[in-house]
Image (tube, rainbow, N blue to C red):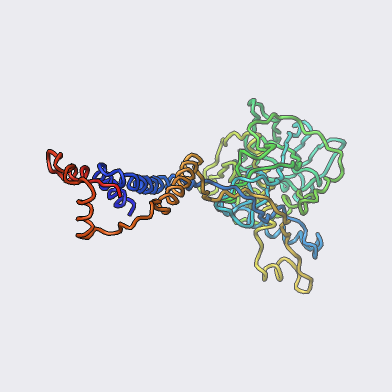
Length: 476
């Protein structure tokens, strides 16, 4: 409508240029419609819609470290924990998304619900720092005693007298735990060579009487390892629930280690970590599970049969040890060279995996009722996960309406001008009162009689409408 009105006003002004009485009104109408046209053009420029990412805080519940069920005692809990560790060899078959809360020797809090638009958030974690030292070869004696003679502590140093029955798996490409000697440390031995980051060996023990298949094992490396808990923090990706490995601080995962002789720790009992159930019973958890795994080792020169334990299998899988002679029947004369820091990392991951299993993997109820506990005893209770909350920054898409100050100013000015024009146009033209209010025949005769219209028309050279209308203008 504004466009058609604007065009009509322009045409009218052009046609009425020769009539001063019509030009003023036409110019006002032209200005009015031009202003309306200008407002139509500038209206889209007044506003703009902008999309942006808005960050809000969201509270998400978390699950932390395993802790003792308030309704159960430690005596009722430990049998469940020990039995659940039968799952240990299979944990390596789980995907990373199935072992949330476990990463490279550390346990960390997990999110109960994911936030697809969330930003990484910090959670607490606990790392298992393992340090191993070699046992001096001159203080470790191999004696061929009776099978049932137990391991013992001799003198003021770790002088371990190991009988043939004490070395359950004295075969190539094997690493295994000795029976528990204390509550603070574990003792391992391996038939393979172990070197530190500098290539140094850890004083392996030369056996007076070789062992293993066809008596091919002449040296054993004994090491004694301690555990310490390290408070950590890490960043969890709320979109996947996984820990960002590089964010764990401090980092307990080792890339180098140096051989040192183990020195006896005089601390009688490892301090209990209240955040972690059975943290002071870790040695019992490592050594107690003697359930046969089904992987049997046979000495080719005897009729004695031994089995790898679940903890043995876990370490061997992690370190890549494969006693291939079990299937091939061919004796392995040399095994791989193991790195000390790889063994320490494997032990750290073993510890973290054991505590993770204790709170995430449980035996069926019938096994708990009739296998773990006596039929007439009260059933135990598995550990429960501690609970907490964490604040997550969540990114949401949003939109906002922006005002163009320049366009708003122009629009305001045009609107005021338009209002003024409307007032002027609507008021009309003031004129003197006159009795001449028609253009009939008598009115025309009266005009010719009282005004010199004829004389003015005679002076027109060309009778164009414009020339005639100009000459015939009569004031009344």
